[in-house]
Length: 321
Image 1 (cartoon, rainbow, N blue to C red):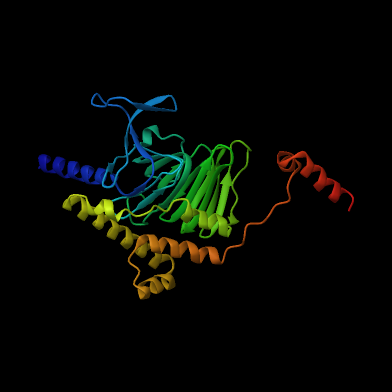
Image 2 (image 1 turned 45 degrees about the vertical axis):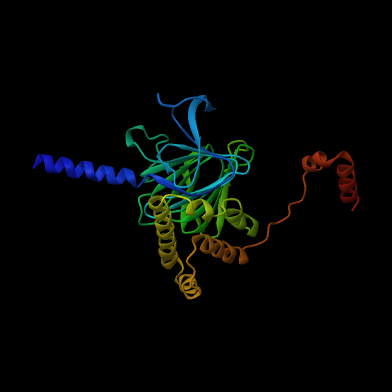
């Protein structure tokens, strides 16, 4: 009886671990996958945050494990799909740690958000399409500026040291907080954005996302398909890629059905079977009803950067009005 219990537990743990192994289904440009060196690894190594990592170039069909780091170059993008259909799209110029199960004992920072897994993003662009019924529901996104609590959604995150972290929600909602004040939580809903910055000591507050912000989610993370490369894979790998693409489609459609039944029916009538096409449709529809980017009056610092002549011309004209 004890042996049976042990076998069941081990099987359950193994199955759970497998749900956190992603597969590369599309990649373009220079994308590296970093992991801690083992005795089997040989140089060259990459160094990041004072830690050395072994690395390989990402390729279609590659398995990606929890805690490994995606490092994309200026022209690099990658799409990763998990067994239940959850999708991660990582844009160019990004450094992103793949999701791992949270160790409650060593959880830093201590945030009582019910999260069961965590993703770390140092910089770059990241879009996640997460099923409410999957293992990455209740996932936490951590950047140097912010912590986002995902509850099954379609969201886009952009982060760099100069401007901080910006979050745009395309479907669902995300609990968003600054690392400067973990007690202050704002709920970001569909069609809204928020940002926070350590550098400028700014805190998040929800604002209606602009068309430009919404379209950026699609333009900065969409990955060109690789049908030619997939066709050359061995039959089992090729079949797995097609199976994951189908799972991704089913997961997105199920989420849309729950969130927006009218859109779900329209997509069904059109016979849409391609996830990339669904993603573009969702973003385009949302952008159509969003406000345009408001042009801000230039500051003196902006004009000084543009040139002394521009500065004098602008302020002399406005001063004498």
